[in-house]
Length: 376
Image 1: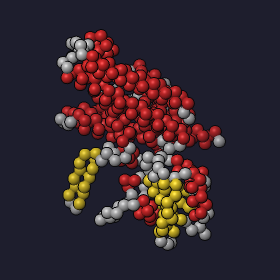
Image 2: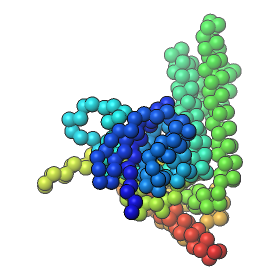
Image 3: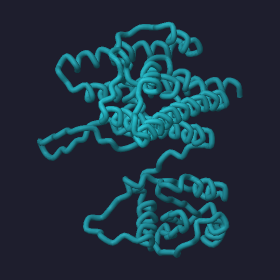
Image 4: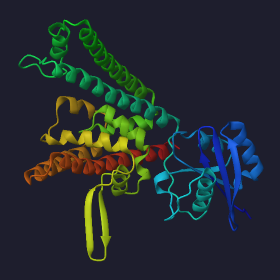
């Protein structure tokens, strides 16, 4: 009979605090080990038969390296959501030892929530799309510095020249000049930074295109299906990289809650109060879905570009996408007609868009499993 040992690990860049909770006994601290492969291997060997060891640690900046080490050694390991670890009221002492003990006890009591651990393909793609997201933020900062610098000195573009078009940048290069050499040097530096950020974003988007072509066939099919309406390639790649298999969510509501786009609620007795969205869960997913929701301001239509994107998707996926066009555009018009704030309307549309994303993903993944079953 197996006697499971629940091992809590408080992981840091250089050290790991270890605690063990026996299946029917007390939890005890084992100590601190270096965060190195050899030290982890020795720990597993010291704790006993590997099939009796269940490890857990909180998701954080150290990533999933430890997870892959432990699973490669044959142990069971789960990475848990740090924000969902139970905290006792009045507990004001926090140390690595106590954190490891708390993880071990909570893991034994099944009070921890495990997060999805991406495989190598999803993690590589996720790193790339997050690098592009960081580049877009840096590009916005660079543009803001340049525009605010020009505004402070009364430099305004000619009538009809829109910001950040080719005409705007041509005006900055040829039409803006400062007599003081210090200010001219500042202008050239800001201008160079804007051009550098634009080149960086373009380079990363090209890398995403190439990465998608080299991705597993199953992943490419889901990415293509999500582009059937309202979601461009970069957004579709981001969604797949952040979520993995969409069928791991039992229903669309679970995906909406995971994105943090559902409303807060505080109910007690006959009182029920709802507030803004929770903003818990995956912030990258929430940002990209709300950004994609802006497309549903426009009336349903199948443009030439959209028709090309739909060439390789099934009729069932096209039907879901067409239903999404009508439903979400109608939702947008209804809420704006009631005078709702545009930002809130788009967030509400994004929340419902997640339901259609889930439906498309589950449909495609079911077809893939069916095809694999027939091939076997």
